Image (cartoon, rainbow, N blue to C red; front, side, top):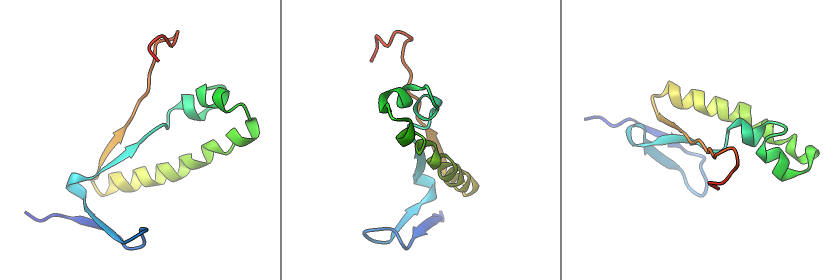
Length: 89
């Protein structure tokens, strides 16, 4: 059985190859509560100027997600959720 590998020749500290069939693209902490104004991330940050830069990563993650899907890579989205009163934190 042929194994398709992706190569990252410019990866640091060394070039890297990985098989698509056994590799996943995992997206963590990209929920609205972390990224949108008045969400948990905004409240925790407490600095609107600093927080305004948080959403800049979204287009980059989207391009990486589109690329991962285009080559048939497994995609995993994490989800953090709690009760409204946060009693399960």
